[in-house]
Amino acid sequence: MRKKVKIGILIFLILIGSAIIGNSEQRTKMMINTLGGNPEVKLKVELPQKPEKIPYYKVVDLDKKIYASKELMRPVNSLPSTFEAKEIAKRYMEQNGGLPDGLILKNIETVKLKGIDTTTGEIVAEKLVSINIIYGREVNGFPVIGPKADAIAVSVSKNVNYFSKLWRKIEYAGEVKLIPSKIAFEKLKKGEIMNIPMENARSLEIFDIKPGYYVGSEDQKVYIPVWIFYCMDEHGNKLSIAVNATGEFL
Amino acid sequence: MIMGFSTPTYPSTTLVDEFFKAAIAWDWTVTQAYYHATIEAYKGYTDTIKAVIVADTLDQYNDDHLWDQGYTVPDEYPDDNVVWYAEWTCSS
Image (cartoon, rainbow over all chains, first blue to last red; front, top):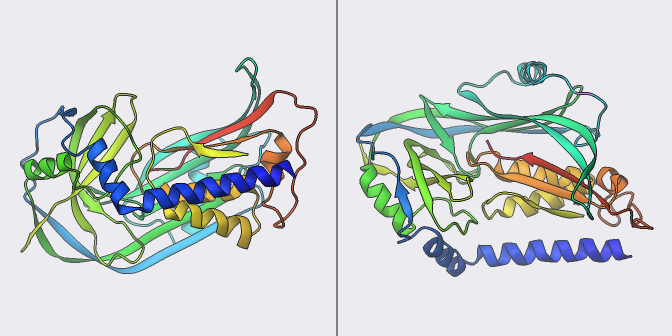
């Protein structure tokens, strides 16, 4: 019975949290508190002058796949090496639609389940779970980011036990001028950004700035050109903040 | 069970939608449903976003389901003061 109550409370908290976050007024406040006009947004790199334009792409198809086995996230006695796990993931992709263009390995890690003594904080047991691999996409060297950006996640233990793919077929649709990065930086300081982090950092240091593309929803018809500001907060957390960079179509 | 994040993240309705889809429509365990939801919500982000799940017992971590969606694991008694903690990166 206590369990049902606990799960009920958790669901309630998730729903309330979503409702609060979904409120646009709250979002605006969050932007202002976090980024807009925040004097502690510090530039640690030069604002790039180039490129002045990038290719523009429209989306012509969407490939979405999800597979999971019953072994997903369950402890196992042994795992393949990270090299072997990458090969297993690659073989799986080759057998399920092929390796997509622009696939970039972004993260690979071993997931472990830890038993922790709550009275001492000591780790008293450790079990292997899986090797998780996440791939992202670059188009002509420009990263594609955002909540619904093209990406593939694979979880491997002995075999692939989870596979999630969201990948678009895109078509070149001309060139678009980028707004100058200086103007994009001003927009960032005002909170005019594409993605609003749940972050209450007191300072953000921008350590890199690159053009790229932003995809916010599955039904988005084009890749939106953005300037991506790669930041780090005072706790060492990395954030990628996108500012719409769409200028004149050429 | 407690589900959350150990890093800053982004608001996402996908997180909630996918969690309940997997836990209720597909009858996945709570751990599997949360893992899936975090991957679906954040795999496109290039920030470091790490999800966390904490269970009181190993059985709860492995087999607990939402009520009426499969086996539900009893509460631990007596308490052994050990919790089970897993963390994974769900962003790219």
